[in-house]
Length: 100
Image (cartoon, rainbow, N blue to C red; front, side, top):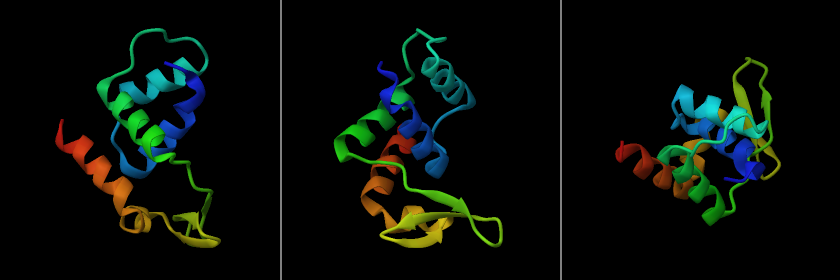
């Protein structure tokens, strides 16, 4: 697996919490060529969502209340609203989660 998408997979996971701790560690180690084993089915499923939809991680920042925010068409929204504002991606993620 190419390391090109590792950051995007981790960013998508940070929004939806799909991966296990082991999966996250695998991606970090793989980014530094320290892991050569095969990726988990969860990692591959997120990779497919990213490549099929051309998904890219949104810009993020901490809000005034220290809760996360993300940029959505020039506007800063609460990170907790990400799933509701992105129903196509959310639907795909829910399918992945239901397969576990």
